[in-house]
Amino acid sequence: MEFIICASIQSFSDRIEYIPIPYILDINTEVEIYRNIFGKYIDEHFLPRVLHNFARIIISTRLNVESKAMQDWIGDAKKYKIYCDENLQLLKMEIYTGHIPNWLSEDDRNRFTAARRKRIIKEGAEEGRQGFSGRDSIKIFNDFFSLFARDGGLINMSNLCDFFTKTHKGLGESIPKGFLESLLHMYNYTILQEVKESLFYFNEEQIAKDLQNYMFAINFEMGASATCNYTGDKLQISEDLFKSIEIRLLGTDTDKEKREKFRKTTQKEYASKTLTKEIMIEKKPLTETDLYLNLHQQYEHHIKETVLEPFLDNDNFRRAIKDFGTEDFKSYDGKIKNDVTFLIDNLCTKYRYKKKGAKEVCIYTVDNKLAEKFKNP
Picture 1 (cartoon, rainbow, N blue to C red):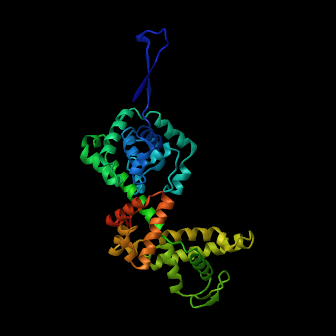
Picture 2 (tube, one colour):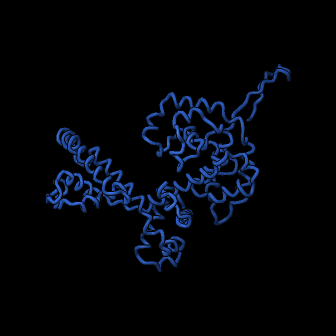
Picture 3 (cartoon, rainbow, N blue to C red):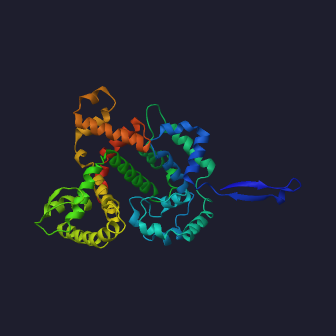
């Protein structure tokens, strides 16, 4: 905790009043301090997210390990184990920056009332009185940056973890138990989603046709033939037709019983609300109804989940990523070149990677088999 001294000009030393100034708990403010002291160029030496993760580690030592307000709000922290630590410090840091993570469930979002937020912020007023001070963090960052910043290389999460667990084990002892592992877990999950999103080719026309045909077909008996009112496609109503679309909506591991239950529920909503209320009364196009939008979101989610599978055991794919931007890249077949170029370009435009960083994070994702680790989180 920092202190400032307040005293009037006429005061004696025994009348000096010490006012405690809590350490910074906001991730973005902590990072800005590093930039102001060491220069904004420091960002160029880090892969995206790693600099902010350094700040998260520093701030974790300043927070109370247990938070009654967070526990009362979230309950069992294990439900967010792929995004957060068991003490919910990572989530609390997001709240302190004014950000609500998109991985929170709808129920927990609804339960995050103004009163809960006020209670969490009130807890923050009692934190920042322990852990690494502002001076400590500047010295630690200087040691870390001096050790890993180098021409042609980018500081990554392995460097960050090694610094606190191997290079300076003493510093690691101040970090809450399990926090580093959870931070790495969250980082791995996040970059996996970025790679999937960047590799995913969104064929809206095909998805729209599949969903409209499906919503039309579920109203007919097996074996019937019908022309879809929405697409004009002639449909043979069969289990194969339903299955081909349902595995994209529910996942490839979904059994027949679950698919049939989903089909009945979807048909009921279509008949009771989508058709009779939204289309006939409100005059909405099918593609703007609540049911369609929900199905669209499910369809897109499950396609993204499997987008990496064709490349996981493809050595050419990894080599092509490594050779991207070199003369050797020209020797690969057209499809691999197109896929890798599409992936790298999207990482740069959507997530602010430089080409070198995009290549590194792709190889990291493949080599660490992140898609397999998070297949059943």
